[in-house]
Image (cartoon, rainbow, N blue to C red):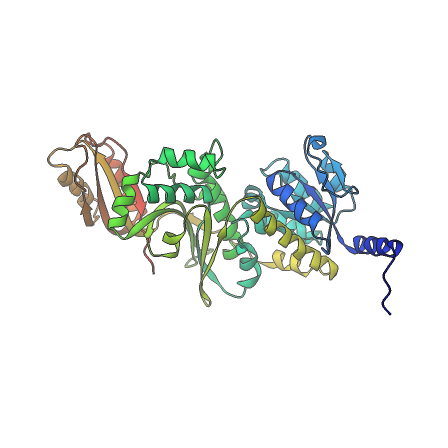
Length: 446
């Protein structure tokens, strides 16, 4: 006969599970932090137990759905001196996030973070610090939100030798560019839409000008290519000059326009050269990049043995990012329950190189001009290109535009960035140009 446990027995069982669960403290109770806390509080059979929540103005943040035994505080030192085994850092930025993460690792607490700026700049040092104190640092949510690309790079693809990574890493830019493409609206209108939908901040400069994407690319290069890259060493080009007419011309070339982050490691000499760049590019309309719409993220990897892999999904938002954070938590908790420190040691054992950084890709190019129309313009541009040994591939000019602001396009055969830019500087001095030339790489499928 099966006996139904009484309340005392059930309570004892709950206390036993709580005592055996991995203790987790959360620092940062914003959009992602709230979503993480919600998952932890609603997962009744979870091996994780939320013990602390730390945030500024904490009294205004308290929620009734959080267990009454959770400690609320506005002082990170309370968390660092607690018995929590894992600290989740979700406040973002470099300070005081760096001090908090270092402090947690130094006292033997593992850390899970979604802080891309911190990992992009201090990831290798923090991984070494974690290993030296026998704990772990996981940052799967710092790139592509809920898309598990970083865990895949660090574990699932670690048996391959990756040579290249490329991606659509910023959902804000992808939303804006795909809206211009689909509705042929001005850039300013697409930006306003993105802000109204919550995809873009009031000041979206970090997204639009490539700062966000290059920090993520630096993390991908660390995790997948084992290279130390200072984000500022990667050139970032803005999407602001992209116009609706560029999508018309791109379509004539069988392409569309996306913000692409790319890194190719070429180890020919010494520690090799990492070719890295972030910015708008022409991509084939039928390619994986060309098909990605709205605020989705896509990462493609190229491996010496495993070939190409693709990772697609929601790159931002509280819930997708929270899923990535909780997945990292469970990974760390499993390692702690095994009593193992092997993963931290393996991270520390990975040799991280510091290659030279170059933007000197060899690629076809798209040059879009806005000019005051008059005879001889194409001849003058062709003269400059010929003087720099650059070959024209095609000339595109649509009818019906105002002759006082006439857009037309020249595409070039493959050439190096370093050869093209002196020609662009010369073209910028011509008196018939009314806007700077928009120069975009054309990425063809290999």
